[in-house]
Length: 333
Ligand code: FCA
Image 1 (cartoon, rainbow, N blue to C red):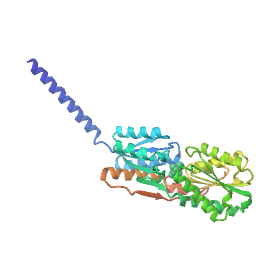
Image 2 (cartoon, rainbow, N blue to C red):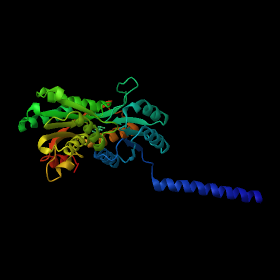
Image 3 (cartoon, rainbow, N blue to C red):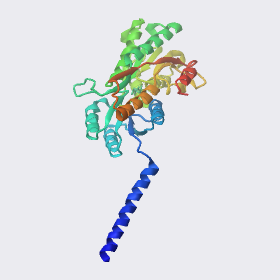
Image 4 (cartoon, rainbow, N blue to C red):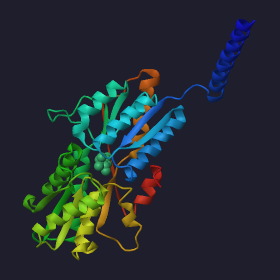
């Protein structure tokens, strides 16, 4: 009798347990595929927009995006382990340092996660781009557009090269940054601007307005004699940093032509009543970098469709009088 009661109790509790499991499964439905999206500078509008468009893809296909900010190597590696622990199947990443590439690849493998890099391409220990699926911008071409836009405006204003200097603010260790600066330099030189009046200001760390101001200030203490300044850089933030440093020395919009890359950060200057030195920007596509990378990752996981190895996206020039319309068309307003 005693034994019977015990067995009955055990059966009841097992049934209860199973029933409980079944119930929770039914109410949650099938588990959604989880995809990580790790970015180096979450406060930057570019990355916020990438996340926004990744969420759009998630809504369409019914997966979940786990968004993680990782401004340094330690945070990146912890983030990857967390994604593994949460049962994610893959992730997209813009790394804070491209030299973390080999460590990221190893960590993704250890956690059985598919991997896709966006914006900044991993560098192997040999200094070469790593064999990881990647979407970046056509950096040199976009740099060329920046340089051409600056040269055209300089021509319109009739500035003499002898009274003008140029600054390029960027992260020299980062390929996509270096190519953007080289592209702008090439186009300025092609338009007849003297190469020895183009100065490069290296940013220490991540390309933000504050780090760019520091880089520009160092450059400006070394080159004090120009009346007019041309400003280009890795992104809007670096160009704004250059412009703010010039303003600090009394060089204003009339004597500055700055052209950014991005659009969403720089447009804040166009919303101001009086023009600043931020003359134009090449608008690049966070929609493609956010939506398409997430879509690629989802199809890779869910349908076994491998994404293209590399994709490089284009940009379009925007100015104070055109940005609203163009950004609206790209769902950025
Ligand atoms: C790099 C820059 C960002 C953005 C991106 C496409 O990561 O730091 O500002 O331009 O490339």
